[in-house]
Image (tube, rainbow, N blue to C red; front, side):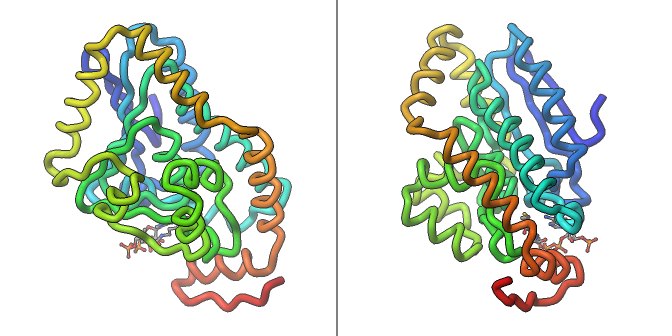
Length: 259
Ligand code: COA
């Protein structure tokens, strides 16, 4: 039993719901560790054919890392947390079965990064996507600087990461961040429909096709991830990070000094 996740199985299709709806499903250390355990179980489930990941409630898929836990994140913790989340998200990306993100609301920061680690993304008309880390004085640490440019191109990824601005579902569709946009009521049915279609194909062909397509994206990814993690850790040491996190929690505009 998990506190922050709900996992159910419909025949051969798994549905993982990130379940902290009162907190916009934000990623805490507890949630990361539960996600790691669940993915470990799924890696052993030979009957599983497709996994769908969504968020609980009406508002959010996942609105990022839990900013309360950022208060004490120094370089050492930043490096460790970033590596742990990169590792769990990479295991999702490389799970033997395809993973579909059904993005039902805000997918921000680590939530965007979770959606990017999934193999296919669809969303509801209410979804919004963004990488607001720079506004907190840090940079993405869960794979975003590596996966976003690969998916939407360097310029668009750069704009999202450097401005921290959100984009809506239609724009996400236009730039190829999501494959399709549906009404909120339709989203899970459409995710199931897609999952069932893939699940009806020969499992080994699906498994190896996924692996081959994933490999096509690899340059020297390990170095990119490692660099991202060190730079994320570095931003955790700045005064601007302290100010950015405090400003969010105190519901005021941050004043940054470049220190
Ligand atoms: N970490 C911790 N708490 C968060 C959070 C986060 N990433 N995102 C939202 N929350 C909390 C809010 O503090 C608020 O808590 P409260 O009710 O105790 O005050 C609650 O969730 C609802 O959020 P609120 O801001 O009131 O809702 P909204 O609809 O006005 O705005 C968001 C929603 C998601 C746009 C806004 O909350 C936001 O920008 N969140 C931060 C996103 C972010 O920077 N993520 C990356 C972190 S690295």
